[in-house]
Amino acid sequence: MSKKEIKSVDYGLEKIFEGAQDFLPLLGTDYIEFYVGNAKQAAHFYKTAFGFQSHAYRGLETGSKDSVSYVLTQDKIKLVLTTPLHSKSPINDHIVKHGDGVKVIALWVEDARKAFEETTARGAKAYLEPTVTSDENGEVISAGIYTYGETVHLFIERKNYTGTFLPGFDAWESDYNPPSAGLKYIDHMVGNVGWNQMDIWVKWYEDVMGFENFLSFDDKQIHTEYSALMSKVMSNGNGRIKFPINEPAKAAKRSQIEEYLDFYEGAGVQHIAVATDDIIKTVSQLKANGVEFLSTPPAAYYKSVPGRLQEFSHELREDIEKLMDLGIMIDADEEGYLLQIFTKPIEDRPTLFFEVIQRMGARGFGAGNFKALFESIEREQAKRGTL
Image (cartoon, one colour):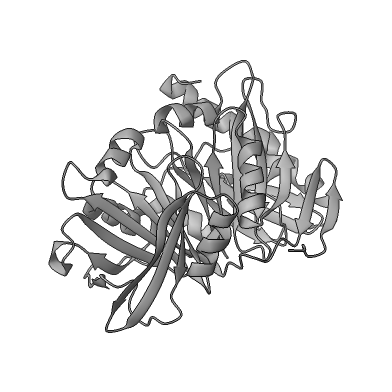
């Protein structure tokens, strides 16, 4: 099958590619499912800290004997928190090994059967054969494949379903629904893989899912005095799904990727980037809710911002003093600029964290912030004794 014409824009060492093979059209991220030790408590945390709302529930009361799941929403974002109900569950094995973490990245498709056939024919390992579930609200077709580590992509076809979430789930009514924090949608999700594995998974996404390498960064671009990593960003044809893939690089000390791989005990989702239209308002609310963020870059970082933006003929619309007070970082490219900030790990294992991002035209991932970001992460690693 022929590829669409690919346009490239040269950003020095980076290249942005538009267009990809069209055998796997993806409509967006359907949901993200976490396997967690206590879904009821985790749901309360995500509501209280991040402003998610109660949406759907599956458990003993709905006929599920093996696991319980709480579904939370905020604008277009859906999180599913799942806990096993007995020790022999494979979900429990996943939690024992990895701790709380992302198991399923569910992708919304028009035709789940075709998505499964196309990807498995190109070498994907099957996780779930096309399966139809139904109730009085219609039917959903689901199918799945494995990606890096034990992570799974599910293809969800819901065009013939009008229910709350999926068959087997009831609407979750709750008297406690804190206000939204202004999070809109999943901007991208980052996976960490082991030594010399990044290019293998880049090729997998190219061959199996028809993605293109959207941006590339090597250890000359992503390094500090102590640590380094390499990263390649994979994107589907319409740009709605973006998966950066990181691997460690040799340096004087242990990088954040090595720390993740050690504590997660394998490859997995490192962080989830969620978009907002007003990052100052969102981060202010998240901090008031108790969300912990990485330390603020030094004042010299913010003094350099106007000059960095002027290189691309952009002018910052936000109050830089407010950005500095909150620790929000700024980066720019030819298309515009972006604002971003990263939480500390949200669990006791130093693994999964969140990024909050606001794009003001920029299509990149904050390359100009890498040094400041990783120095901040290294300060946290030093406290943990894992640098």
